[in-house]
Picture 1: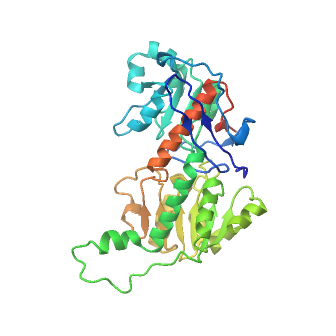
Picture 2: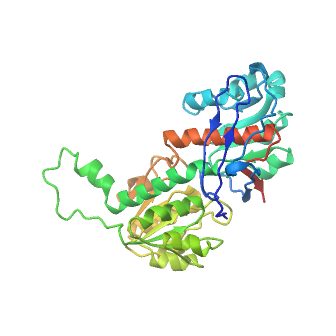
Picture 3: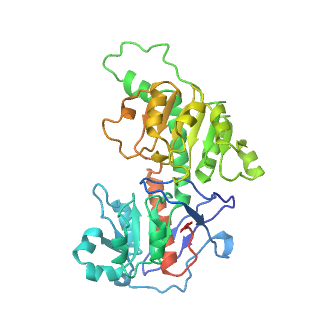
Length: 394
């Protein structure tokens, strides 16, 4: 599920006249979850490095320099608006690609289909289906912005000879940050206290019995110890937390010792001991509704469940029942199924739940780094270079 060997990815030279360098460094092992959407697909990921100096991967200086009108075409859903690629990211893409929106493509399929060699998937859009793939004879790569690819049918895409890439290195830190933020906010009842009592016009005094629980020295159970899970462990160590983890594969001894983590071969053992349980797994058929009524029943009645992976990893009906009946203390969720939840969903009416709108990677820095990583991946494919972050169907 992970590799511990760090990667330095990747410094690109200018590929077109007048371009600035697309340069950045990511140092970490393989990642876990990323962004939204709901198709369950098992996949495996590999990273390959060129034998260049300083561990960097570089697009060859001999790469053909192309005029602006010869830039490879990349299909995007739109620019700006509710679902389109952010304008700053579109400007970044334009340095390397000729941008073609879905509206432009649909308006002139015959001409545009020949130009499109790549698709940039941003927030799970555009939708990649068989009809689209059949209409793009020159398509070589789909660059997903984000690490999660459960919205992509990898086997179908592969059958067209198209490669899929993702951006694991850019997402680990911000996603770990949101996990810690949710844990702290839930433990200290920040949302209730800060957003309700402190600002309510009905508040006359602050109650002395408005108590939360401490994170420091508590036991944290991490389910899924990829790069995001490991980043969470690094942060939790600063709080002197006792750290347990469950993973398909055990980390190396030196990695465990570096963060003070203890391996639980059975997830049930982790659930029974933890004050906070954080889910950091990919969505696959095996992890779909991995946390259900039985698992919730194993947790302490004082425990909090935190989900920064995918909403469908939890049986939400079972979670509602557990929260209503005080089987567990609270839940803090950055992901739900679906997103957003229907406005009448019972989770939205419980006072022991915090829900954020899937903002694990919603930072200025992360969004740009994901775009840069996706661009590097797509350019590597188009230039027959080793691909930094290719995702393979299993």
